[in-house]
Amino acid sequence: MKLDTILVLDLGGQYCHLIARRIREQQVYSEIIQCNVTPKEIETLNKKMNVKGLVLSGGPSSVYMKNSPKIDSRILDLNIPILGLCYGHQLIAYLSHGRVNRGKKREYGITYVTLDKPVGVLKNLNQREKVWMSHEDMVFELPEEYEILAHSDSCPIAAYRHKKRQIYGLQWHPEVIHTDNGTQILKNYIFDICNCQANWKTEEFVEKTIKEIKEIIGNKKAISALSGGIDSSLATLLASKAIGKNVNAVFVDHGFMREGEVDFVKEVFKELNVKLTLINAKKRFFKALRGIGDPENKRIIIGREFIAVFEEVARNIKAEYLIQGTIYPDRIESGIRNNSEKIKTHHNVAGIPSKIDFKGIVEPLKDLYKDEVRKIAETLELPRKIVWRQPFPGPGLAVRVTGEVTEEKVDLVRKADKIVEEEIDKSGIKRKLWQYFAVLIDTKSTGVKGDSRAYGYTVAIRAVESKEAMTASFAKIEYDVLEIMSTRITNELPSVTRVVFDITHKPPATIEWE
Ligand code: XMP
Image 1 (cartoon, protein in one colour):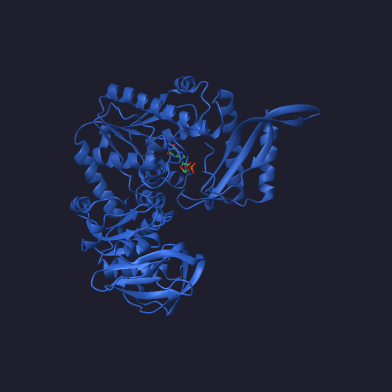
Image 2 (tube, rainbow, N blue to C red):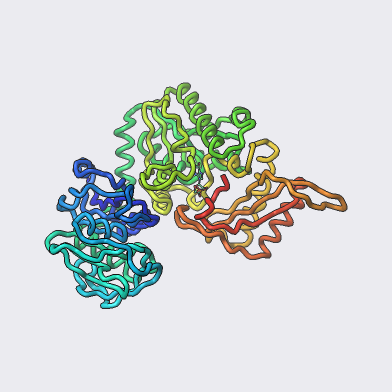
């Protein structure tokens, strides 16, 4: 079955993801695509999915800037409903020969708009609406074929529509929760204007994905890169449902695992009746990382070694396919978006060398957000201890020690991490947190232990709240809990003289330190 789909054209806005997620919350499938998509490519996509609507995202640019992202103006003639948000709203006006200029006043944050005509996407709204804006440019004039639907004190054309075609523009962001009736606006667009069916459901995803895996792999053999986290565990389980014993889960112990990890994974996958091979590759990874301090290099080397190990195992068991638990934000953060910056190389995506010894890579979760992965995992028989596990990066503790990776440092951070985990467990705030862990900082500092001067490592405690890891806030943990952690870490780890708490949000910091 083809899913009704709304495509979000990425014009560089920080809320691009949020738009897709909000649409999916209405059980309608949505994907982010690059804004330079051509009408022909949209036609091709239509063979895979029913493209029922397009959303042009916001973005930091000005339509008059030389290299600002634009869309092919023929897209406006495709007869597919279009909703432009913020920069997208300005871009439609600009491409239709309206006038866009810098406003006298920048509107940022909560604003009130007055509806001149509550129709189309603005149906069932109040005459005055609280909305969230963030812009300097605005639309000042529209061509004949458009009409104004709303204005604010400083923005004369805050919403418009084409008189004959289903094209709408909003200067504000309905996807942000601070816009009171944002959900209603999106529902109007999705269901009334685009006529979408709410057919993006987890049961259908499971059925469709199992079928696709069967079609791709057939009766050939595959190995599944299992890390023990929810993503790779779910990908492995789906593959096992599709091709049974022809998938062999491979867990590579690179030496950067948390305490107890290997036994945990063994136990869970035995219960699930999935074939599992454990590879102890510690020596190889430590050797490959000797002398390497740069985080990107570390990630790339670890990715390379991983694949090399997998290829060896695959050759041994004659597997032609590799299954990975890559999810949507992994791909985005590894730089598949045109107008967004590459942040870091996630080892399960861009760290993979292009010359790879597999016939194909299968990524069953590549279009899902984390909360969708959890929802699906819950409907299958994955144990809760996996579903609600905190995310753990593929390169493991190697990206939680800054600078060169040595056995001593990894051992220290593993012990500190266990203390953080135990104390968070005891404090009862675990479910509120997205991640909580320890980082070992390369720089030493002076301390006093017993009666003597000590010169030792610093451990940073990182604890964040987040919904999908694209943004995160540091968790405001009670001082008492932090104090216990700090005391335990310095007492139980003699070579640590200082413990600090990381109070940086993402952005500007990333969640992991490297
Ligand atoms: P950052 O540090 O980029 O992390 O804010 C965002 C989320 O991704 C996890 N992470 C990774 N996951 N492979 C993964 O599978 C990786 O290489 C990797 N690096 C970071 C991180 O723990 C956080 O949840």
